[in-house]
Amino acid sequence: MNEFENNKVILWDFDGVIIDSMDVREKGFRKVLSEYSEEQVERLLEYHRENGGLSRYVKFRYFQEEILQKEIDEDEVARMAEVFSGIMRKELTTKDKLIREVLDFIEAEHSHFEMHIVSGSDGDELRFLASKLEITQYFKTIEGSPRPKISVVKDILKKYDYNRGEVCLIGDSINDYDAAKENKIDFYGYNNLKLKSMGLKYIVSFS
Image (cartoon, rainbow, N blue to C red; front, side, top):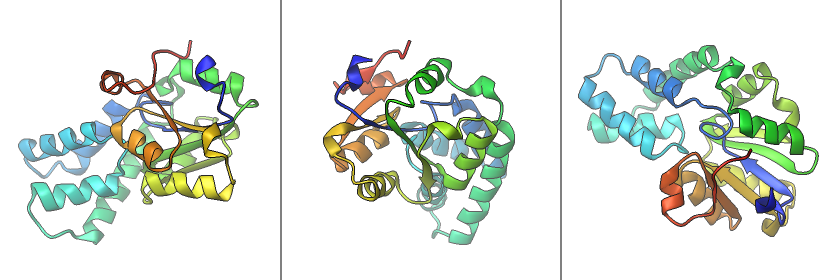
């Protein structure tokens, strides 16, 4: 694709870019928060939809502090995150959720680019899912939360001494754009027309 002619490194978001997981993620939040009111859960899901690139730890803290108006309980946040991860490990291991055109591109081009996954999802869970989905071999590293995505990207750039002008990040949320902008690398939006309407560089299709 001509979009990447100046890039040698591609950092991939996971949810919504490599895998179509939005319905499963929302189902997971509903299960974890099943003891709370529908209104409270919907407020969390609205925050989740607007901030797809943020980790579940941030979202559960938001739920406690902003929606429940309680002091953040980190033990409870960790418990919620663990339950959520168990649901994801069960529900996201079938290949039918992978976005075919993206996977075809990765399979065809992984030898031409250095590729990494940088995600707001839990890092251990991501590596588990990548193994089950048999895509681990395409990526130099697979990294996620609890570290913020901005920090994950910064650490990769430093560790591998990449030329920032040759690195791009592909994501489907404003948080992905923020991570790219903060680290002074190219950003391409995908699978979220709001990003296109903002005038950002946008991939309509990988086909």
